[in-house]
Length: 381
Image (cartoon, rainbow, N blue to C red; front, side, top):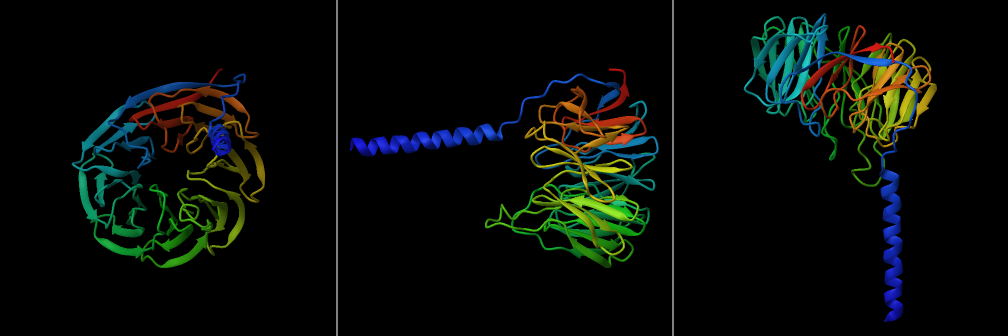
């Protein structure tokens, strides 16, 4: 009996030791110390409402000209002067929003948790029309002025007439058994709609009639369990020249020829966040919170910053010669775009930062989960 107890005790001790090691491996690394080489100055800050639940939604802001559009989950949609932060108009919808905000061609677009697509006047905020989809809208609808594209959470893509809201076409894409709740925002460029789906594919459609032009595999489901096989494309596609870029969880970052759907280059990367780019590089934050820079044309790795390991980074954003990323402790880190070394660190206004960072001229616009919008500018350290 005593021998048995000793064996059990030893097994328990080994188990506790293993758990301790795993917990230690999962801990975010402490912040490294460095000497700032540049400053970040707050230009303006304003609360626009209740914010949003980052577990379900990643609300975005949209900028057209000098006007910035934002919304909160309670249905408040706000237009602001992006240079000063002054409110231009505010409109209250009697909807709980899940996808916000898209804007363009005199329209502001949001989607509700009940599957409604709502179009507002960009000039006044007046409601123009509503249209119904089949499930919650968790990513902002997009428009090219003629058609409004919306992706519902059940994997269906809808196109509506931009003036009337009448349905033009739809596409039904089968969902895997298990997916992340977040979705990539469709991208509309020169008559094509690029849409990432939860089965790991990026698809290209003709905007006017919904004809499927090509489908390209980005992430490949692999593993024995459904959890291991999750390969969502939750990284919103971006375009530079003839290439469209995106990334997937448990997969790759890829550059795809826009005309043919052929993969020009790829690198192994798992990411759930949007990408950022400048004239020469594309940047990504991986699931382990390493930050990567790749050559736009060749895909060669330019640098990798591992010093924010497991700090739960959100999507990166470019500001001049720097790259900005925000971690789960609400620190905004400014890295040199050329080599990934630290240049500055601040805590922006608000709390919780899961929305993509937006650059407007020399301003970096930051949208917190708590509903605070703020704009920052490079300055002296």
